[in-house]
Length: 143
Image 1 (cartoon, rainbow, N blue to C red):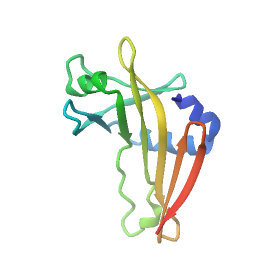
Image 2 (tube, one colour):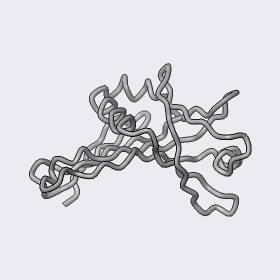
Image 3 (tube, rainbow, N blue to C red):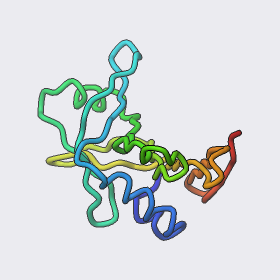
Image 4 (cartoon, rainbow, N blue to C red):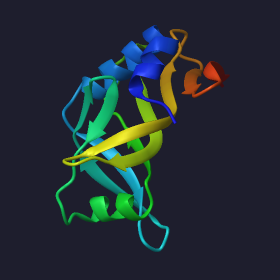
């Protein structure tokens, strides 16, 4: 598992773009696993602090119960529409997957994957960059 600081150190420009997308709006989406294994999505606020990514949960919330039972999570940045008439100016979206580790007042995310997706300036394909611990940054094009 990795900390957010590991992503920043390994791929600073990539981390800066992901961070900006996560900070674009207050509310993000958190995916957890219910007791029966089906997915649950919830609105969530996150913080990047002291080299880690954090989120909170009310003591008896369903998402908190989910991550205590099965710590695997995925976070999705706020969605931002492309400017009208210019799809290629879309800033993209970011996703972070990992495991939630409960601390005294909130959860820290041990990161297993970070992904960034955006539309190429030509507008004819997506560019998907992903970062994994021990493997670093990869990039693919999807037509």
